[in-house]
Length: 500
Image (cartoon, rainbow, N blue to C red; front, side, top):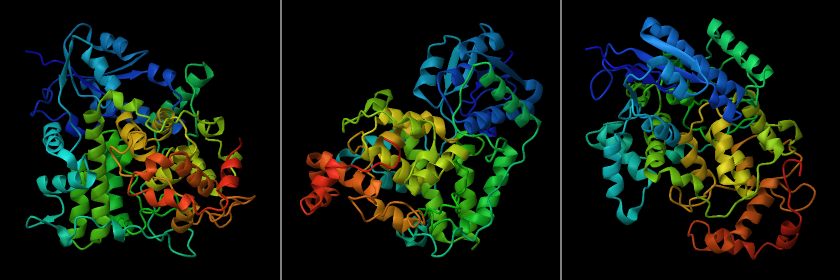
Protein backbone atom coordinates (compact mmCIF):
# COMPACT_ATOMS: atom_id res chain seq x y z
CA UNK A 1 0.00 0.00 0.00
CA UNK A 2 1.33 3.44 -0.94
CA UNK A 3 1.79 5.54 2.23
CA UNK A 4 -0.27 8.70 2.60
CA UNK A 5 1.53 11.98 1.81
CA UNK A 6 2.65 13.97 4.81
CA UNK A 7 2.26 17.77 4.96
CA UNK A 8 5.08 19.74 6.59
CA UNK A 9 4.41 23.27 7.80
CA UNK A 10 7.16 25.86 7.49
CA UNK A 11 8.06 25.61 11.18
CA UNK A 12 8.42 21.81 11.09
CA UNK A 13 11.75 21.63 9.31
CA UNK A 14 13.99 19.45 11.50
CA UNK A 15 14.66 15.71 11.19
CA UNK A 16 12.50 14.96 14.24
CA UNK A 17 9.44 15.84 12.12
CA UNK A 18 10.22 12.96 9.75
CA UNK A 19 11.01 10.34 12.38
CA UNK A 20 8.77 7.30 12.00
CA UNK A 21 7.07 5.75 15.02
CA UNK A 22 5.23 7.40 17.92
CA UNK A 23 2.46 8.39 15.57
CA UNK A 24 4.79 9.86 12.96
CA UNK A 25 4.50 9.56 9.18
CA UNK A 26 5.60 6.49 7.27
CA UNK A 27 9.33 6.69 6.60
CA UNK A 28 8.67 6.36 2.87
CA UNK A 29 5.74 8.79 2.75
CA UNK A 30 5.93 11.48 0.06
CA UNK A 31 6.07 14.97 1.52
CA UNK A 32 4.25 18.22 0.81
CA UNK A 33 5.24 21.76 1.73
CA UNK A 34 3.10 24.77 0.81
CA UNK A 35 4.31 28.34 0.46
CA UNK A 36 1.08 30.33 0.81
CA UNK A 37 1.33 33.89 -0.44
CA UNK A 38 -1.83 34.86 1.48
CA UNK A 39 0.23 34.76 4.69
CA UNK A 40 2.16 37.81 3.48
CA UNK A 41 -0.89 39.54 2.04
CA UNK A 42 -2.74 39.51 5.36
CA UNK A 43 -0.06 41.05 7.56
CA UNK A 44 2.99 43.29 7.30
CA UNK A 45 5.79 41.07 8.53
CA UNK A 46 9.33 42.19 9.12
CA UNK A 47 11.24 41.82 5.88
CA UNK A 48 14.04 39.85 7.58
CA UNK A 49 11.49 37.44 9.06
CA UNK A 50 9.82 36.81 5.70
CA UNK A 51 13.25 36.21 4.20
CA UNK A 52 14.28 33.77 6.93
CA UNK A 53 11.08 31.71 6.84
CA UNK A 54 11.01 31.40 3.05
CA UNK A 55 14.74 30.67 2.90
CA UNK A 56 14.39 27.93 5.51
CA UNK A 57 11.43 26.34 3.74
CA UNK A 58 13.10 26.39 0.34
CA UNK A 59 16.37 25.09 1.72
CA UNK A 60 14.54 22.19 3.34
CA UNK A 61 12.73 21.41 0.11
CA UNK A 62 16.05 21.41 -1.76
CA UNK A 63 17.52 18.99 0.79
CA UNK A 64 14.59 16.60 0.48
CA UNK A 65 14.79 16.61 -3.29
CA UNK A 66 12.41 14.32 -5.15
CA UNK A 67 10.66 13.14 -1.99
CA UNK A 68 8.87 16.48 -1.50
CA UNK A 69 6.34 18.39 -3.55
CA UNK A 70 6.95 22.09 -2.92
CA UNK A 71 3.94 24.16 -3.96
CA UNK A 72 3.68 27.92 -4.26
CA UNK A 73 0.02 28.88 -4.07
CA UNK A 74 -2.25 31.68 -2.98
CA UNK A 75 -3.63 29.76 0.03
CA UNK A 76 -2.95 26.54 1.90
CA UNK A 77 -6.19 25.05 0.63
CA UNK A 78 -5.24 25.73 -2.98
CA UNK A 79 -1.75 24.41 -2.40
CA UNK A 80 -2.98 21.18 -0.82
CA UNK A 81 -5.45 20.67 -3.64
CA UNK A 82 -2.64 21.10 -6.19
CA UNK A 83 -0.23 18.83 -4.32
CA UNK A 84 -2.54 16.03 -3.19
CA UNK A 85 -5.85 16.41 -4.97
CA UNK A 86 -8.43 14.57 -2.90
CA UNK A 87 -5.92 12.11 -1.45
CA UNK A 88 -5.71 11.73 2.31
CA UNK A 89 -2.69 13.37 3.96
CA UNK A 90 -1.25 13.50 7.47
CA UNK A 91 0.10 16.52 9.33
CA UNK A 92 1.55 17.12 12.77
CA UNK A 93 -0.40 19.52 14.95
CA UNK A 94 0.36 23.04 13.72
CA UNK A 95 1.63 25.69 16.11
CA UNK A 96 -1.28 28.14 16.08
CA UNK A 97 -5.00 28.06 16.84
CA UNK A 98 -5.77 29.37 13.36
CA UNK A 99 -3.67 26.74 11.58
CA UNK A 100 -5.16 23.98 13.73
CA UNK A 101 -8.67 25.16 12.86
CA UNK A 102 -7.70 25.17 9.18
CA UNK A 103 -6.38 21.61 9.04
CA UNK A 104 -9.21 20.38 11.26
CA UNK A 105 -11.70 21.73 8.72
CA UNK A 106 -10.18 19.66 5.88
CA UNK A 107 -11.77 16.18 5.74
CA UNK A 108 -8.81 14.70 3.86
CA UNK A 109 -6.28 15.68 6.58
CA UNK A 110 -5.46 13.34 9.45
CA UNK A 111 -4.06 15.24 12.42
CA UNK A 112 -1.07 13.70 14.22
CA UNK A 113 0.25 14.68 17.66
CA UNK A 114 2.64 17.44 18.70
CA UNK A 115 6.35 17.30 18.05
CA UNK A 116 9.29 19.58 18.70
CA UNK A 117 8.91 19.99 22.47
CA UNK A 118 10.15 18.22 25.58
CA UNK A 119 6.90 17.97 27.51
CA UNK A 120 4.01 15.88 26.19
CA UNK A 121 0.56 17.55 26.41
CA UNK A 122 -0.67 14.80 28.76
CA UNK A 123 2.28 15.47 31.08
CA UNK A 124 1.44 19.17 31.21
CA UNK A 125 -2.25 18.39 31.67
CA UNK A 126 -1.50 16.15 34.65
CA UNK A 127 0.61 18.88 36.21
CA UNK A 128 -1.96 21.64 35.56
CA UNK A 129 -4.88 19.63 36.97
CA UNK A 130 -3.05 19.02 40.21
CA UNK A 131 -2.05 22.60 40.87
CA UNK A 132 -5.14 23.53 42.87
CA UNK A 133 -4.79 26.86 44.60
CA UNK A 134 -1.06 26.98 43.95
CA UNK A 135 -1.65 28.20 40.42
CA UNK A 136 0.34 27.50 37.26
CA UNK A 137 3.67 28.77 38.55
CA UNK A 138 6.49 28.55 36.05
CA UNK A 139 9.03 27.74 38.75
CA UNK A 140 7.07 24.65 39.81
CA UNK A 141 6.63 23.55 36.20
CA UNK A 142 10.34 24.05 35.53
CA UNK A 143 11.35 21.89 38.48
CA UNK A 144 9.01 19.14 37.34
CA UNK A 145 10.54 19.23 33.85
CA UNK A 146 14.04 19.04 35.32
CA UNK A 147 13.10 15.98 37.42
CA UNK A 148 10.99 14.18 34.84
CA UNK A 149 13.53 14.61 32.04
CA UNK A 150 16.63 14.32 34.23
CA UNK A 151 18.06 17.70 33.23
CA UNK A 152 20.82 19.15 35.45
CA UNK A 153 20.06 16.63 38.19
CA UNK A 154 22.42 14.72 40.49
CA UNK A 155 20.99 11.87 42.56
CA UNK A 156 17.49 13.27 42.46
CA UNK A 157 18.65 16.74 43.53
CA UNK A 158 19.31 19.83 41.40
CA UNK A 159 22.92 20.10 40.25
CA UNK A 160 24.83 22.37 42.60
CA UNK A 161 22.11 22.14 45.26
CA UNK A 162 19.91 24.97 43.92
CA UNK A 163 17.10 24.96 41.40
CA UNK A 164 17.26 28.63 40.57
CA UNK A 165 20.43 30.65 40.00
CA UNK A 166 18.67 33.83 38.86
CA UNK A 167 20.37 35.86 41.59
CA UNK A 168 23.71 35.09 39.94
CA UNK A 169 22.39 36.15 36.53
CA UNK A 170 21.27 39.72 37.10
CA UNK A 171 24.55 41.58 36.84
CA UNK A 172 24.63 44.94 35.05
CA UNK A 173 27.06 45.29 32.16
CA UNK A 174 30.71 45.74 33.04
CA UNK A 175 31.62 49.37 33.69
CA UNK A 176 33.50 51.29 31.02
CA UNK A 177 32.81 48.55 28.45
CA UNK A 178 30.69 49.07 25.36
CA UNK A 179 30.82 45.34 24.49
CA UNK A 180 31.25 42.05 26.30
CA UNK A 181 34.60 40.39 25.73
CA UNK A 182 33.14 37.29 24.10
CA UNK A 183 33.52 35.56 20.72
CA UNK A 184 31.03 36.69 18.10
CA UNK A 185 27.94 34.55 17.39
CA UNK A 186 27.65 32.22 14.42
CA UNK A 187 26.83 33.95 11.15
CA UNK A 188 25.50 32.00 8.17
CA UNK A 189 26.53 32.64 4.59
CA UNK A 190 23.84 33.43 2.09
CA UNK A 191 23.53 31.38 -1.09
CA UNK A 192 21.54 31.26 -4.32
CA UNK A 193 18.34 30.34 -2.47
CA UNK A 194 18.65 33.48 -0.35
CA UNK A 195 19.16 35.53 -3.50
CA UNK A 196 16.06 33.94 -5.03
CA UNK A 197 14.00 34.73 -1.91
CA UNK A 198 15.17 38.34 -1.89
CA UNK A 199 14.31 38.66 -5.58
CA UNK A 200 10.80 37.30 -4.96
CA UNK A 201 10.19 39.60 -2.00
CA UNK A 202 11.29 42.60 -4.05
CA UNK A 203 8.98 41.55 -6.88
CA UNK A 204 6.00 41.07 -4.56
CA UNK A 205 6.49 44.57 -3.20
CA UNK A 206 6.77 46.08 -6.70
CA UNK A 207 3.62 44.28 -7.81
CA UNK A 208 1.69 45.34 -4.72
CA UNK A 209 1.28 41.75 -3.54
CA UNK A 210 2.93 42.28 -0.15
CA UNK A 211 4.23 44.99 2.16
CA UNK A 212 6.90 44.63 4.78
CA UNK A 213 8.36 46.58 7.65
CA UNK A 214 11.99 46.76 8.74
CA UNK A 215 15.17 46.04 6.84
CA UNK A 216 16.44 42.88 5.22
CA UNK A 217 20.21 42.85 5.53
CA UNK A 218 22.37 39.75 5.19
CA UNK A 219 20.65 36.82 6.89
CA UNK A 220 21.73 36.52 10.54
CA UNK A 221 19.92 33.36 11.62
CA UNK A 222 20.15 29.70 10.58
CA UNK A 223 17.95 28.54 7.71
CA UNK A 224 19.18 24.94 7.56
CA UNK A 225 19.77 22.12 9.99
CA UNK A 226 23.52 22.29 9.31
CA UNK A 227 23.61 26.00 10.09
CA UNK A 228 21.51 25.52 13.22
CA UNK A 229 23.84 22.83 14.55
CA UNK A 230 26.84 25.04 13.84
CA UNK A 231 25.17 27.92 15.72
CA UNK A 232 24.38 25.65 18.69
CA UNK A 233 27.94 24.33 18.77
CA UNK A 234 29.48 27.80 18.63
CA UNK A 235 27.23 28.99 21.44
CA UNK A 236 27.86 26.06 23.80
CA UNK A 237 31.59 25.96 23.12
CA UNK A 238 32.47 29.66 22.99
CA UNK A 239 29.65 31.86 24.33
CA UNK A 240 27.76 29.86 26.96
CA UNK A 241 30.48 30.38 29.62
CA UNK A 242 29.76 34.13 29.72
CA UNK A 243 26.01 33.93 29.17
CA UNK A 244 24.65 33.79 32.69
CA UNK A 245 25.87 36.76 34.67
CA UNK A 246 24.90 39.42 32.13
CA UNK A 247 21.87 37.82 30.49
CA UNK A 248 19.64 40.69 31.68
CA UNK A 249 22.10 43.46 30.76
CA UNK A 250 21.84 45.85 27.80
CA UNK A 251 24.58 47.61 25.85
CA UNK A 252 23.85 50.05 23.05
CA UNK A 253 26.70 48.83 20.84
CA UNK A 254 26.32 45.14 21.71
CA UNK A 255 22.69 44.01 21.38
CA UNK A 256 23.61 40.32 21.32
CA UNK A 257 25.96 40.13 24.35
CA UNK A 258 26.34 36.37 25.05
CA UNK A 259 22.84 35.35 24.01
CA UNK A 260 22.53 32.22 21.92
CA UNK A 261 20.47 33.56 18.98
CA UNK A 262 18.95 30.07 18.75
CA UNK A 263 15.29 30.99 19.28
CA UNK A 264 14.56 31.40 15.57
CA UNK A 265 16.12 28.01 14.73
CA UNK A 266 14.20 26.36 17.57
CA UNK A 267 10.92 27.92 16.46
CA UNK A 268 11.46 26.85 12.85
CA UNK A 269 11.93 23.30 14.11
CA UNK A 270 15.54 23.14 12.93
CA UNK A 271 16.68 22.31 16.47
CA UNK A 272 15.02 20.22 19.14
CA UNK A 273 15.07 21.65 22.68
CA UNK A 274 16.44 18.35 24.04
CA UNK A 275 19.66 18.63 22.06
CA UNK A 276 20.11 22.24 23.15
CA UNK A 277 19.85 21.52 26.88
CA UNK A 278 21.88 18.31 26.55
CA UNK A 279 24.79 20.13 24.92
CA UNK A 280 24.64 22.89 27.52
CA UNK A 281 24.62 20.39 30.39
CA UNK A 282 27.51 18.49 28.79
CA UNK A 283 29.53 21.72 28.75
CA UNK A 284 28.99 22.16 32.49
CA UNK A 285 29.81 18.54 33.34
CA UNK A 286 33.02 18.85 31.29
CA UNK A 287 33.99 21.95 33.27
CA UNK A 288 33.69 24.17 30.21
CA UNK A 289 30.85 26.43 31.42
CA UNK A 290 29.75 27.61 34.88
CA UNK A 291 26.53 26.29 36.37
CA UNK A 292 24.81 29.69 36.54
CA UNK A 293 25.19 30.14 32.76
CA UNK A 294 24.01 26.63 32.00
CA UNK A 295 21.07 26.77 34.40
CA UNK A 296 20.04 30.15 32.97
CA UNK A 297 20.02 28.75 29.43
CA UNK A 298 18.23 25.55 30.49
CA UNK A 299 15.62 27.66 32.28
CA UNK A 300 14.92 29.56 29.08
CA UNK A 301 14.66 26.48 26.85
CA UNK A 302 13.30 23.70 29.06
CA UNK A 303 11.42 26.00 31.42
CA UNK A 304 10.00 29.19 29.97
CA UNK A 305 9.71 28.07 26.33
CA UNK A 306 7.93 24.83 27.22
CA UNK A 307 5.71 26.68 29.70
CA UNK A 308 4.63 29.22 27.07
CA UNK A 309 3.89 26.51 24.51
CA UNK A 310 1.63 24.54 26.81
CA UNK A 311 -0.12 27.58 28.30
CA UNK A 312 -0.97 28.69 24.76
CA UNK A 313 -3.04 25.52 24.27
CA UNK A 314 -4.20 25.30 27.89
CA UNK A 315 -5.72 28.80 27.88
CA UNK A 316 -7.25 28.42 24.41
CA UNK A 317 -8.06 30.85 21.63
CA UNK A 318 -10.16 33.18 23.83
CA UNK A 319 -7.07 34.13 25.81
CA UNK A 320 -6.07 36.62 23.10
CA UNK A 321 -9.02 38.79 24.07
CA UNK A 322 -7.73 39.22 27.63
CA UNK A 323 -7.66 42.89 28.63
CA UNK A 324 -8.41 43.25 32.34
CA UNK A 325 -6.69 46.64 32.47
CA UNK A 326 -8.97 48.01 29.77
CA UNK A 327 -6.13 49.27 27.60
CA UNK A 328 -7.43 50.47 24.21
CA UNK A 329 -4.92 53.02 22.87
CA UNK A 330 -3.72 52.30 19.32
CA UNK A 331 -0.04 51.85 18.55
CA UNK A 332 1.41 55.12 17.22
CA UNK A 333 2.59 55.17 13.62
CA UNK A 334 6.26 55.66 14.52
CA UNK A 335 6.16 52.44 16.57
CA UNK A 336 4.31 50.47 13.92
CA UNK A 337 6.81 51.61 11.27
CA UNK A 338 9.90 51.01 13.47
CA UNK A 339 10.83 54.66 12.97
CA UNK A 340 13.56 54.83 15.60
CA UNK A 341 14.94 58.10 14.22
CA UNK A 342 12.02 60.15 15.58
CA UNK A 343 12.34 58.76 19.12
CA UNK A 344 14.14 60.97 21.66
CA UNK A 345 14.56 58.52 24.55
CA UNK A 346 17.86 56.76 23.82
CA UNK A 347 16.85 53.37 25.23
CA UNK A 348 13.69 53.10 23.15
CA UNK A 349 15.34 54.53 20.03
CA UNK A 350 18.23 52.08 20.33
CA UNK A 351 16.04 49.01 20.83
CA UNK A 352 13.55 50.02 18.14
CA UNK A 353 16.46 50.45 15.72
CA UNK A 354 17.69 46.97 16.61
CA UNK A 355 14.27 45.56 15.75
CA UNK A 356 14.15 47.59 12.53
CA UNK A 357 17.59 46.43 11.41
CA UNK A 358 17.58 42.78 12.53
CA UNK A 359 14.12 41.69 13.68
CA UNK A 360 15.57 40.69 17.04
CA UNK A 361 16.50 41.89 20.51
CA UNK A 362 16.95 39.78 23.62
CA UNK A 363 14.33 39.30 26.32
CA UNK A 364 15.04 42.33 28.52
CA UNK A 365 14.72 44.97 25.79
CA UNK A 366 11.53 43.22 24.70
CA UNK A 367 10.07 43.20 28.21
CA UNK A 368 11.49 46.25 29.95
CA UNK A 369 11.91 48.71 27.07
CA UNK A 370 9.36 47.88 24.36
CA UNK A 371 6.71 46.08 26.40
CA UNK A 372 7.00 48.33 29.44
CA UNK A 373 6.55 51.45 27.34
CA UNK A 374 3.42 50.00 25.71
CA UNK A 375 2.00 48.93 29.09
CA UNK A 376 2.58 52.33 30.67
CA UNK A 377 0.74 54.07 27.85
CA UNK A 378 -2.22 51.74 27.79
CA UNK A 379 -1.78 50.40 24.26
CA UNK A 380 -4.19 47.70 23.13
CA UNK A 381 -2.57 44.39 24.19
CA UNK A 382 -3.89 42.56 21.11
CA UNK A 383 -2.22 45.14 18.86
CA UNK A 384 1.00 44.93 20.86
CA UNK A 385 0.95 41.12 20.53
CA UNK A 386 0.41 41.34 16.79
CA UNK A 387 3.32 43.79 16.48
CA UNK A 388 5.70 41.46 18.33
CA UNK A 389 4.50 38.51 16.23
CA UNK A 390 5.13 40.32 12.95
CA UNK A 391 8.32 42.20 13.80
CA UNK A 392 10.48 39.49 15.39
CA UNK A 393 12.18 36.72 13.44
CA UNK A 394 11.35 34.24 16.21
CA UNK A 395 7.79 35.49 16.63
CA UNK A 396 4.93 33.03 16.23
CA UNK A 397 1.41 33.16 17.59
CA UNK A 398 2.14 30.56 20.28
CA UNK A 399 5.31 32.41 21.28
CA UNK A 400 3.93 35.90 21.53
CA UNK A 401 0.37 35.44 22.76
CA UNK A 402 1.15 34.33 26.30
CA UNK A 403 4.46 36.19 26.46
CA UNK A 404 2.93 39.54 25.51
CA UNK A 405 -0.66 39.31 26.78
CA UNK A 406 0.34 37.65 30.04
CA UNK A 407 3.97 38.46 30.82
CA UNK A 408 4.49 41.84 29.17
CA UNK A 409 1.09 43.56 29.19
CA UNK A 410 -0.46 41.91 32.26
CA UNK A 411 -3.71 41.80 30.30
CA UNK A 412 -4.75 38.53 31.91
CA UNK A 413 -4.63 40.00 35.41
CA UNK A 414 -1.92 37.70 36.71
CA UNK A 415 -2.60 34.24 35.31
CA UNK A 416 1.07 33.96 34.30
CA UNK A 417 2.92 36.55 36.38
CA UNK A 418 2.36 37.84 39.88
CA UNK A 419 2.82 41.51 39.00
CA UNK A 420 3.03 43.84 35.97
CA UNK A 421 6.55 44.00 34.54
CA UNK A 422 7.21 47.70 34.26
CA UNK A 423 9.61 50.11 35.92
CA UNK A 424 10.95 53.61 35.93
CA UNK A 425 14.17 54.69 34.29
CA UNK A 426 16.26 53.62 37.27
CA UNK A 427 16.09 49.97 36.25
CA UNK A 428 17.18 50.71 32.70
CA UNK A 429 19.96 52.93 34.01
CA UNK A 430 21.22 50.19 36.33
CA UNK A 431 21.13 47.44 33.73
CA UNK A 432 22.47 49.31 30.70
CA UNK A 433 24.65 52.07 29.31
CA UNK A 434 21.67 53.64 27.56
CA UNK A 435 20.82 56.48 29.91
CA UNK A 436 24.08 58.43 30.11
CA UNK A 437 23.91 60.29 26.77
CA UNK A 438 20.09 60.48 26.78
CA UNK A 439 18.21 63.78 26.65
CA UNK A 440 16.21 62.63 29.67
CA UNK A 441 17.31 61.83 33.21
CA UNK A 442 16.14 58.53 34.73
CA UNK A 443 15.59 60.09 38.15
CA UNK A 444 13.38 62.95 36.92
CA UNK A 445 9.61 62.48 37.03
CA UNK A 446 8.70 65.98 35.83
CA UNK A 447 10.30 68.88 34.00
CA UNK A 448 12.09 69.19 30.69
CA UNK A 449 14.36 66.22 31.35
CA UNK A 450 11.71 63.93 32.84
CA UNK A 451 12.31 60.30 31.83
CA UNK A 452 9.36 58.90 29.86
CA UNK A 453 9.73 55.59 31.72
CA UNK A 454 9.85 57.16 35.17
CA UNK A 455 6.93 59.46 34.40
CA UNK A 456 5.07 56.64 32.66
CA UNK A 457 5.62 54.24 35.56
CA UNK A 458 3.96 56.51 38.10
CA UNK A 459 1.11 57.36 35.76
CA UNK A 460 0.53 53.62 35.29
CA UNK A 461 0.55 53.01 39.05
CA UNK A 462 -1.88 55.88 39.57
CA UNK A 463 -4.22 54.77 36.77
CA UNK A 464 -4.52 51.24 38.17
CA UNK A 465 -3.97 52.02 41.86
CA UNK A 466 -7.12 50.25 43.06
CA UNK A 467 -6.12 46.94 41.46
CA UNK A 468 -2.43 47.26 42.30
CA UNK A 469 -3.13 48.12 45.96
CA UNK A 470 -4.57 44.62 46.39
CA UNK A 471 -1.40 42.95 45.09
CA UNK A 472 1.29 42.42 47.74
CA UNK A 473 4.02 42.89 45.11
CA UNK A 474 2.73 46.30 43.98
CA UNK A 475 0.99 47.66 47.07
CA UNK A 476 4.11 49.49 48.22
CA UNK A 477 4.32 51.42 44.97
CA UNK A 478 0.69 52.52 45.39
CA UNK A 479 1.43 53.72 48.92
CA UNK A 480 4.35 55.73 47.58
CA UNK A 481 2.02 57.73 45.36
CA UNK A 482 0.95 59.79 48.38
CA UNK A 483 4.59 60.73 48.94
CA UNK A 484 5.08 62.23 45.48
CA UNK A 485 4.95 65.99 45.83
CA UNK A 486 4.89 66.41 42.06
CA UNK A 487 2.16 63.85 41.32
CA UNK A 488 -0.30 66.44 40.03
CA UNK A 489 2.24 67.93 37.64
CA UNK A 490 3.30 64.43 36.56
CA UNK A 491 -0.28 63.51 35.69
CA UNK A 492 -1.05 66.79 33.92
CA UNK A 493 2.17 66.89 31.86
CA UNK A 494 3.05 63.36 30.74
CA UNK A 495 6.36 62.72 29.03
CA UNK A 496 6.52 60.54 25.92
CA UNK A 497 9.60 59.13 24.24
CA UNK A 498 8.39 59.66 20.69
CA UNK A 499 6.33 62.24 18.81
CA UNK A 500 2.82 62.79 20.12
